[in-house]
Image (cartoon, rainbow, N blue to C red; front, side, top):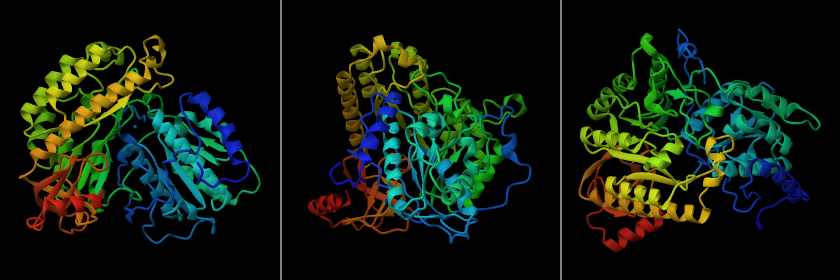
Length: 552
């Protein structure tokens, strides 16, 4: 783009790189136009939690199988005073984190390793000796964003950085292609080799002369390791707790199992150690994540009959934990015990994230997903048994073979069930998946876009109605950050997950991590306006709207 500074010949070099990458991703339109990953973004300072490894090594025996998804843009902030680097020089590291919460956990553990080895984690990539780009490869847009972030990081080698390391799902899936098309990258590191990344960085900052990228990927079946020793990049009071890894489902549109491995549960003991460590570090909201979170324990067999319901009851015993949230639940594995646990444990948010993808049986069959009848009965049971439950889901429009009738059925389904939280995506062709071979059934992009926009608008209307229904109620709000304009704080209710859902604007100023009871007095689109102590009673509508305008 016009305001992007490039060195002489850089545009031509990028063009060559893009030609190679386009053989991987033929639908991507890359280049520097619209780069969306500013490497200078800063976060609130976080802490780094450390503790000795637990006796018994529960991570090494997590399962008899021993095997191991808009992307967030983060730059690191200095936490604890750094130790002296082993190499004595050039020890500053910055990281750009893209993708899902599972990638976030990977990034936090990776940075924790580096800090414990003497590397200094810095706020701005321009101040770093080495920039790590932790990539996402879920869908086309995620790949595009990841490649753009890599290209921008590579440019820093002209001015400040000594090296660029690529990690994450793209590194795991496309290691050889990325190293071949982007020789300016110094290392491409997969999941199994994350513990060695410090060695790679030391090699980068001490090497002389040009070298081709180091590629270290390893297997997708990566054993679990302790994940409590982290350099936190999420809010201090809210953290992700990974309970499982990989996926055994054969959804025809999804390539995740090819690089995240088969499903296996982390051991009960390992999860509880990590839950206690996170709580001790100040986390009061634990967000349970996996590819299929509610499948946790299903692979233990008769040797260990504990399942997710048992885990929820145990986590709820941690006194300082206030909220437990379930994300990424597959529309199966909802046992009677699990539904009862969600309903009866006060600390478990009455919020369940269940990606459904579609509802028309012909589409579901081609997707290799559970049929409509199963889903409808499950949702009815959950709504009947879990009072006030809020359901979050995702839908795909334009899947190969989807007809106008199929889409209408999905629209009618959304009207009937009124999902309070949802995301809608156009089908993304993923190489190596069965759906990518259904070329004769591909839906025209203009129809795909139109159907997505229609469904998205419908869901947004439902979100506005849900927000309006909260006016007059008093809700628990967890404060996330300082407010702007006429508001002192911004937080979330129990039916809002961090980063992806709506928020509450509060008149009063509270420290992040504070829980308050707030009366909901107004709405702003999907968001809520709350008053914790009557401060908004005398504010006129014009003043309120003006304050909201400043906040947005």
